Length: 475
Picture 1: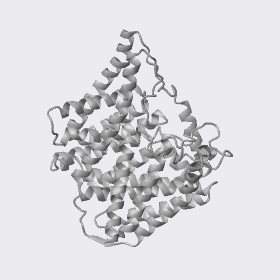
Picture 2: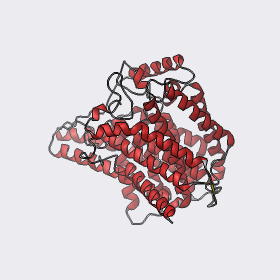
Picture 3: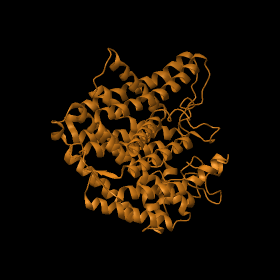
Picture 4: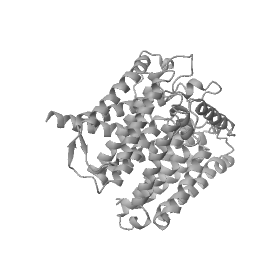
């Protein structure tokens, strides 16, 4: 009975923190400053660490393994080899403890994806609705702050240094990552939910148009290119089945662009006011190319095991960036070629299995919700994989949590007919979760305690090197 109550409590806590992460933390710093003085980014990181810890505790307490999850032995062996390579790379890194933080976080997030798959299986429709509505709460809070700032600036003719009204992120590109993760799933209510209320659909359309205005305002070329790649690939693969989804995307991006021009160009010119924007971080890709060249050089110097997870900052003495803004080059530089090939092979195999199971023919037999969900998940995967080639999608806390949440959704959705409620005892899974939890606590806790003492800027090992990218200290 005690074990059942503990599992129920942990499940409730993990789900609640997940919802808070995707809904409230993108707008508000919910960690009390009197408890630990943190920035918005560090607050989100602490929530991520808490979520991972609770998921690992749940996995330890569960002591069982739900049958029906992917059981391809080659995939299992590949994952074990990947872990071995990561641990070896960390051991040989300049600062093994900081390398261990990254390994622990990513391993814990993998357990999160399995937890999400389990939650989806237990009540798939309800889980999708809760998650979708939580994301809608998040984007509504972001839009409320944004448009209140806009209206205030317009009425009082007071220039605002934007993106000040976007309150939940220390960097506008972190916000762009959050936006891109949401663009697929938030269309599900219009595509397949049984909506109540006469005007609900109209409000959802207006909300999506307003959300696109924020994206155009942020002037992120990478997000638009990634969105276009997602549209083209999704349309090429799913053809007519994807048209309702793509039509909504095209409608909202067009209306959002027109609205942006009206709000930020036409109205200010008519009123004789100026809305100062500060979202163009760079007008050239020269700095990106420099980071990519440096990543290639580091890979060539350390081709087998890399320089160590989360160690790009230790070698990057020419800029303030702690990661190369390219997921593949980051893996090559920090983890080495063998680990990168394993990651790419697993990802490629996963996409192959997904398309084999969910294709235009098979979607004809699915319900409207399942068909729309399959297309939205695939679109989200393609867009963010593309964007990760030019930005830190795999680095930032909310983006990491959303990435593995979507992976978990895809796992649960892919295995929805194979999963069953029969569970079998499994000693290895809770043992591995326990090892990861111990490693996470031992590696990350010293820095958290350091921050609690008021030394926020001393989160890392100090200033003999740039330090880790886990905190805001280095972006």
